[in-house]
Image (tube, rainbow, N blue to C red):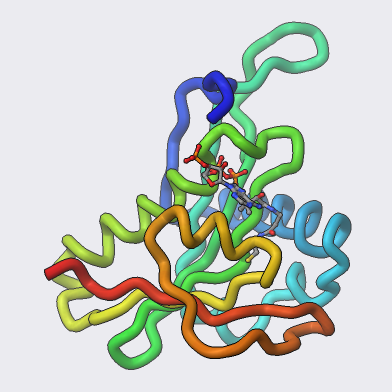
Length: 163
Ligand SMILES: CC(C)(COP(=O)(O)OP(=O)(O)OC[C@H]1O[C@@H](n2cnc3c(N)ncnc32)[C@H](O)[C@@H]1OP(=O)(O)O)[C@@H](O)C(=O)NCCC(=O)NCCS
């Protein structure tokens, strides 16, 4: 782990239009412009029912001021008794500072503890194959073989509700 570069980290569920814009801004930069997943920044059917998580932190601006900036996002939604996580994205210059891990833990904390999710037995996701170690470190398990999604190898991963 690198030394902490992120100050005053706030992780919230998107509620306002501005927060929604911020989440799509990060998605667009990371998933579409960097990784080339064109559809990732276009709201889809799942976005109508998904919750978006956004991570803000104080970062130094070009003129040395501290500014609150959106640095990372993901979405999650319920499918029967499974919560599915997707669109996980951290801006490139802020990777390796635990932003991704903190967002994942934020969702797990909600799902395992909030009454709204008491019927949820599992959290699952479709990981880019090359990123599976990030989720393995967080305690996710691989299920099945890799498959192509958007032309890129992915693998299904899950974590069961702690007993
Ligand atoms: C994958 C991604 C979300 C990780 O976010 P991050 O904020 O850089 O990761 P963190 O700093 O929270 O890392 C947590 C741990 O996972 C490890 N890790 C992070 N990315 C990893 C990777 N690609 N491969 C292996 N381990 C990784 C870190 O070393 C860290 O380990 P530690 O807890 O022992 O220190 C981020 O790199 C990203 O947005 N990538 C581009 C978009 C993408 O690939 N999204 C995932 C789609 S499935």
